[in-house]
Image (cartoon, rainbow, N blue to C red; front, side, top):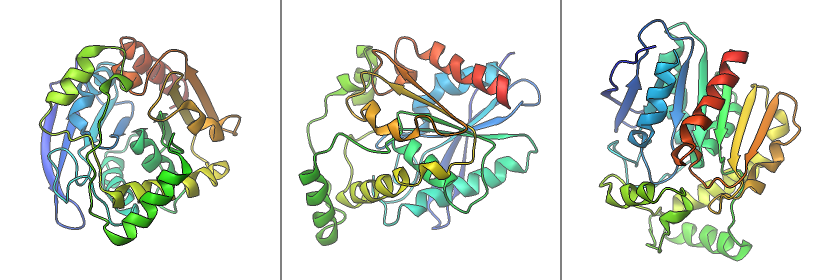
Length: 273
């Protein structure tokens, strides 16, 4: 199916900050619409190939630059309450739901944590949940977690700038080069945001057995940023299919096999939506 070119539009969130939204629209009535929730320090524009592939398969796709990220408003890479991310997902889902087709929530990394936490909340649920390397845990030593939580109490907007090796993203060097050259990306976050991620990851992981939305979880077996062990809590849960992809790093959709991985998601949706 021929996909129309992606379209960018603008709205506001509940705080009145600008929210940038990218849409990939199929040529006919969509079988479902996929709401893409990106990871920390990135933006929805990095999912151009993913959104286009969904549209070509007959699925609409919508990706928002989360508050404080990309071209959306808000303090850069900072959050006061993790629920603010959930507010934005809820508002986008309400608009999508009004179209009258099934809604799929797809979250990568921190976006996977947001999406899982959303599906465990009392908010209106999507019809399907897809997770890519969800940050339900992280390869962070306990002392670093403790330090981040304490520092966040004192200086929540402090943003340490630490070295970041883009090789953890993908085996394709061009992905790392594009990441570093992207003016909308700064590979860092405030300790306030980090502390909210830590707290939410722990509380969400302890409740994943309550998931009621049919779920597909894909995790790179060579993911060093969010190790595959982080999603082990989903293994064997009713209604959850978890696949560990050998040799793939953190951004599975940006690996050389990325189109095949998106194809796996499409095949799963074709069989279940």
